[in-house]
Length: 421
Image (cartoon, rainbow, N blue to C red):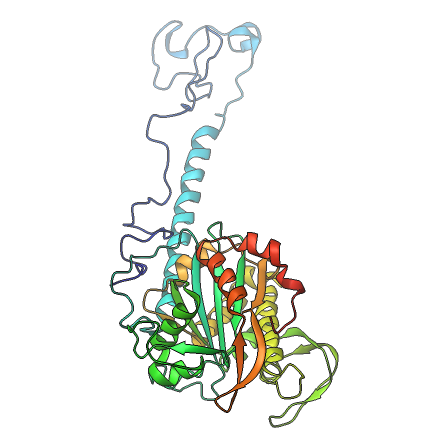
C-alpha cells in the first residue's frame, strides 16, 4: 500500500502544481473590485479612463462647427486652460498590463522551479524500506507530525548496491521527529551496539526472533528488518526512511566550501594518511570532515563520541547551507542539492518537493540532538553492547508518538545530559 503520494499524483498535502486542485496565479474575477477610470469626478467635465479626451475624436460638427466649441479668452479651452497638445498616459491600463506580465513571469518561474525540484526528486535513489510492513497503513501526508529514520552508512564504496541485503551497515541510526507545527526537529541517535530484540521476519511479531546488537538487523533482513526492529523497540511509527552515504557527503561538504567543527582533543587519525586533528575549532573540507566523524577509538566515550561528532557535522552542514548565501545563489544551490541527492537513498514515497516546502524554515538552531536513554556499555554473550534504560527510553518514545516532545524536553533538559544518555 502506497504510504504517501509522490509528486504528480493526487491525495498529497503540501504540493502545489497544475492538476492538484490549486490554481497558479489566481486573480480576482472579471468585473470585481475597482474599475479603472470609474472614480467620481466633478460634474460638467468629460473623462475617459481618467484621461481628459479633448478635442473629441472624429468630431466634425456639433456646437461651434468643425473646430468644436468656442474657445475662451486667448484661444484657450473652456475655463481659460490652454490645450497642451498631447494625451496623458493611461497609467491605470499600463499598471494592469504590467501586473499581468509580472504574474505570468512569476507563474513561468514557479513552474520552472517546480520542474527543477521535481527533477531532483526523480534523481533520488529509491529503496523499498517498508517491504512487508505497509499492510493496513494509511497514506501519510506531510501535514502534521512526521517521524523519519535516518540511516547513516560509513561505506567506503559509494558505488555499492543499495538493494543488497548487507549493503547498509547502520553505522548511524537517528529518528528525526518533526512536530506538527514544523518549526523544530528532535533527532534521537540510537547506538549501533544497542542490545535489542530483532524480529524473525519483516512482518513478524515483535516478540519473535532473538536479541542482538541493533546493527545486526541489517544482516538479518536489510533495511526493512532494521525499520521493523526500530519500530518494535520504540513503538514509534516511522513515516519515511532516508539512507545517507556519508562517503557521498564529501561532495556535499565541498559544495558548501567546507565546515567548521569543534575538536575537543588533539588526535591522530587511525585512517591513512593519518592526519592530525588539533584541539579547537577547525575548518574542514569534505575529506577531512568525513575522517573526523569516523574516529572513535581515541575517545574515552568511544562510539558515543563518534555519534556526537556526526550530529555536530549534520548541524554544521545545515547552518552553512542556510547562513552563507547558498540558498540564494543559484549556482551554489544547484551544486549543493545535486550533491545531496547523490548521497541519499529514500523510500519509495518520500517527496523532496513536499519536504522542502513544508520544512523550509528549519535551521540548525531549531534542532535538538538527543541520544536514546541508556545505561552505558556491558558485556552480554561475550559481546560489548549498550544497554537501554528501558523506563526512560519508553517515556521519551511515548512523547514522540504523542507529538509531545516539547513537554518531555522541558522536563528532562536533554541538552544537559551526558553524551551517553
